[in-house]
Image 1 (cartoon, rainbow, N blue to C red):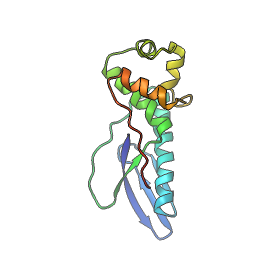
Image 2: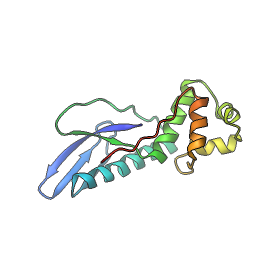
Image 3: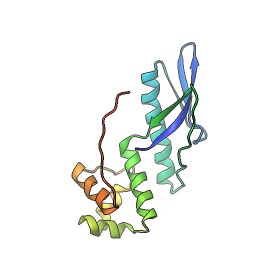
Length: 142
């Protein structure tokens, strides 16, 4: 869905990671699995603050190197960010989308709010369709 490159640094007691697209966003972990989990949390919190403050969300850049991994933004943060981006690209208002999916304007606003987002799969399907998209859900290994 939404992934950002992270530079992995190995230390004697574990790992730490930095996100080159997001100045100051760093975290650490004792194992790679823990590092990725912590990275998802740090990335999601960082983007959630930017989003809530109305700041621009940087596009993820593309890096290729041995010490680069791609970390996913957690769905409850990624979906509101992606919804807003797609809606704006289609030049639609929140009211326009709310009408298309049969929800009130206030109910739709929660879908674009990181702190209040909580949508059922069926609602996400309606939202995707209203934006000319198809919802695909996937489960991946760490």
